[in-house]
Length: 338
Ligand SMILES: Cc1ncc(COP(=O)(O)O)c(C=O)c1O
Image (cartoon, rainbow, N blue to C red):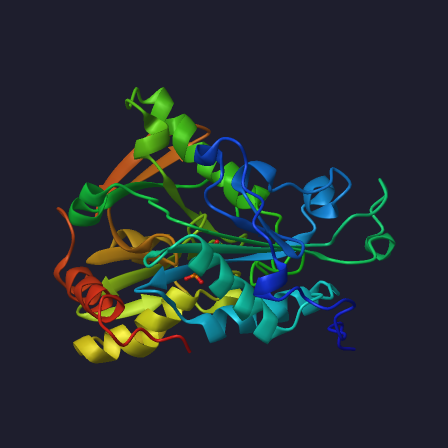
């Protein structure tokens, strides 16, 4: 049964989407699309009865803008609508309108290189869980800039923590669905930060930022907000989606475009901890993170450090070649919007 129905109300055109500026212009930016209106940041609000807030009921996308183009726009739209459908969530605007909303936000905020956060919430309902008490889904689009990791982390590679907490099994809540419910990932990330604090790492919340999560069968899945690749003997491997990962669009770009362009064989293959720790290189991919090397993996047991594994001293050569190719493509005049 398709849950995507015709939208229920006409979407405002750019001309009928007024921007209501505030008295304090520093609070205006960015202008944000909230349920049919482009409003200053200080006025961008949703109801406390929105089930996106009450229950984490909704879906989202994180999308890069390079040189004014919406990177891999088509794939992000496919994933957004597919994920919404899997949650029986009707998105009240068409795919074309959703793209138009993003372009309006980019234009209104003068973004050439930035990041779009698209959020579709279940909408305003009652205090009960019942999603069918929410007559219409909410649509939010934020076009802003983002810096996930410091530039030196890209040059030197990052330290990450192997999470104790396993990934939510597919049978419980499929990690392929990019839902507003990210607590499994957030709690894993907290492990890294708390371990860092316990180890006396200064500003651990800026230093130990990513985790690697195993599924309940001991297979490597992904990070809290990134997919993972390992490199062994010149070949790249990434876990298949059925281990329980988000089908990352950057992961696909690495697999289908960057690896072939750099002559790096690549394969989807499930692997465990031994293969991770024995890899020649490890790197993470995501729209916000782009591509970043992992140089060290910390293991712990209930926040007691058990071992530290050095993968590389800085960024490995294959990661570097792939990342250079990535930058070359996204800074060219020919940014793929497919
Ligand atoms: C859990 C998770 N895995 C992987 C990714 C990377 O996906 P993409 O490359 O589509 O941004 C994300 C991105 O938000 C994520 O949240």
